[in-house]
Image (cartoon, rainbow, N blue to C red; front, side, top):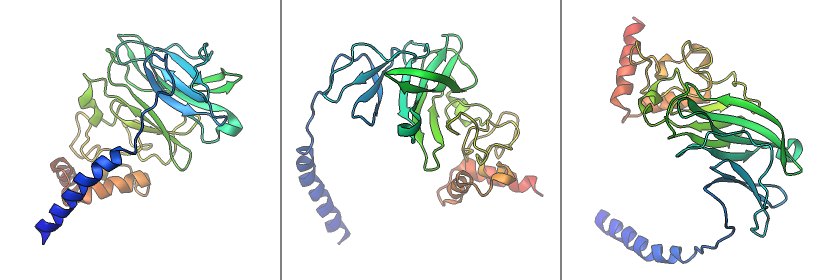
Length: 265
């Protein structure tokens, strides 16, 4: 019975796949952009598009590109994968006109991802503010992350790359490399972030990895069982604990729990 069910499902997949493919149609909406990276739809139907080479463009509803880029952009570090990345509208954009940008900032020898915001007024950026710069600054021009999303409570999360050569640092809660950070829209740190009161940890990180550890400490230092007591009821904390309770939890997670139990004796 099980074999016949699997065969039926597989046959249905083979039949349905070509039919689903027919539902897609590719059309060229706009042309002439250089390394387009992200887009955001304005309430009036126009489109904001970032070009990695450092320009923010406005595309009209008919697909035509305004000849002049949006004025008032910050100077970005542009090389290889580095440049201007995300553009995202504030959840209350219709009222406050804030938009958010991520871009590589610095030089080839010392750079990282930066988050900023500005108001779009008459197709120009005003009231520009730097909100956050990932630390530490590192050399090279690869792996920046840069995606922005807003949560239900209107805080924002920003993805950060590991810089490629520093990818092992993604498990170190003391820095921002290879992390997702959660911030208030003005760049301040939400006080319910679970690492706010944990010494030596970056407070912008919304949860500790079950397998993370800081140099010179036990395996459990950055684990679920090591986050601060005041953060134990936070959603991020609960999600981390659920991951550690899964039957298939990682060996590192099991070691972290054992280390925490030993330290409490």
